[in-house]
Structures are given as C-alpha cells and as structure tokens.
Length: 138
Length: 79
Image (cartoon, rainbow over all chains, first blue to last red):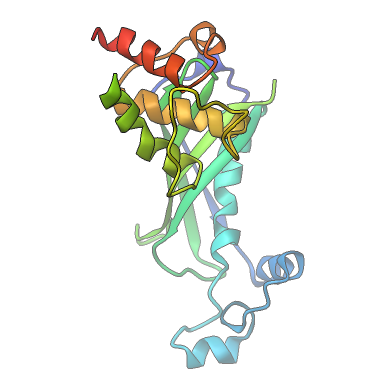
C-alpha cells in the first residue's frame, strides 16, 4: 500500500493494477447490494439477452476505483470524496481487467485532487471511465 | 463584477443540483440549501478551473458570502 502525503503528489502521477472478478465475487455483490437483476445473476437470462455469461455489475467493477485511491493513489491516507463514472462496455467474470489513473488536478487550498481513471479489458477496450475526487483523512 | 456573478450561476446550479437556483452577493452556506462542506470544496474547485486561478486556504477562510468570493476572483483576475 502506498502512503503518499499531499506534498508527494504531482500532476501526472499515475498508478495501475490488474484484477479479475469471479462468479463468487459477483454473487457476493448481489447479496451485499440486494441487486438481483437477472442480467447479472441468471446465466440463462443473460444468454437470452445476448451475453455469453452474466454481465458483471458496473458498481462491482468500479470498486477498482476505490482500490486505486485507497491503496495506490494516494493510498493509506486517502479519503474518497466522490466519483463520476461512465459504464462504456460490459465485462464478465474471468476477464482480465486493468485499472489505471492519473492525477489531473490539484486543489492546494483543501488538499484535494482529481484522478482521471479507466478500467480496460485485456483487449484494451474501455469498460468504464471515472473522475475520482480524493482528499486525505489525516 | 456583474459578469462574474453571472458566470457563477451555472457553477452553483450544477454543483448544488438546483437548476433554478439564483445566487446573489449575499448568498452563503447558511442561506443556500445543500451548501455543505463537500459542496464547498467542489464549488471552489469548479471556480478555480473556470477562471484558471488558485485560492489559498487563508483567502477562502475569510470569505463570508458569494460577494466576497466575487471580489476575490476579481482581484486575482486583475480586473
């Protein structure tokens, strides 16, 4: 886990990591969120809708943005203020995903910064993009 | 100065999610709904981006209302 302080941050500083979600993770997300929509939980329904397997929840794959801020940028001292997310493409359990983000704005007065981030699949297709607003809790 | 107030209207409406909001020089966090601390940071960030200026924390702490913010923006823009 990184432990960047405000003074360590610069425009353009970036981090990224890979991740894979399993069907069990998707089932756990359905349980936690209560979102039991069949597109995400029912293989037969997903197949009939034109997908080879259930589509991963957008907010599950977007949890990678939480990891990006809380573990990498800035890491230990992060306090997430907000995220604007677009879901560009579906993705599926087993897909190799890559999340990366770069600092694009620094607000000196309140020590809050913004990260432009994406989640892409192994074909480099953009699954989602986000603008993440992050401060520090200490 | 009036132009700055007009510039700020869409910023406040967007950040505070109030399409019909009209702020005046007397508007502040006490008399505008949902102007909480996070919204305040978002407002300051949006204003910095709009005018390509930077505020110091000490400057922001002295602001009591939108009118004070307008005066500070005007000062930074050298108008």
